[in-house]
Length: 190
Image (cartoon, rainbow, N blue to C red; front, side, top):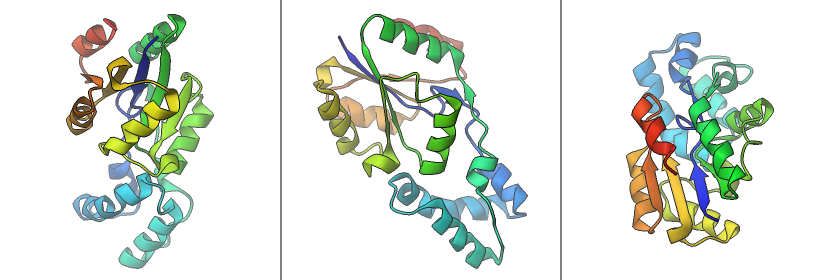
């Protein structure tokens, strides 16, 4: 038995980017909005601030009155069928397959409602763990919880810095490119 940790965004699901649509809906310059968002991205993913706090900041900064949850309204992910198939095959062979994702609560809840968390033996979200990739503790916590050492663990992600961090711990890695048919074929070699 092996442990497989799959990232969610741009691996298990695609069509995840919503910031341009959010900025457009608020009539904000995208580059300015993105620069501001990046200061809050990791605290949101670590679960140290709620999205409601972020929207209060946006309201003050831009003189807006944002209501609802734009991060959900414009987040419209689609399942990545080749990866879902591979996850199912790994689980049917008796491997342990979990999700390890940098995310925040409102996206995680939408994914839960879509049934995307149910395809895993367990799902680990950064905002719940208070840890984010590429921090080594993110991977160590999952392996500890799952009871697997690095040499029995595989990690699949679309960001090279996350892959590099896992490799440094001795975890087997696969850098996934969801736009590449070759990537899907290579993934099936597990």
